[in-house]
Length: 134
Image (spheres, rainbow, N blue to C red):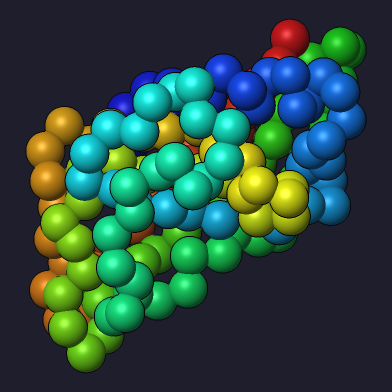
């Protein structure tokens, strides 16, 4: 997966305890135009229609601190189009679905638009750690 960009308000929410990755539910939003990284709410992300998309919830989260470095790991997510197409989308946004505003956390730009046709899948590979704070 390409390098992630962080949403700026997420840093403050994390520092002030508004986000708890060990208990909060995370989700994925899909957009075809780039949302500003200054968005503090998912409402500012131009999402695609999810009528034919499988679940976008992520879990479980695994987070731990070792020697002053915190790491958040999540399972890869397989999106499946069922009954019709999903997209087009270019941006994948990780957001905190427990936060009152569905706080956007990170965004990945796939470089070009993707459409999942009926029965097609896309695996969002989060690698070892989706977020590391040192």
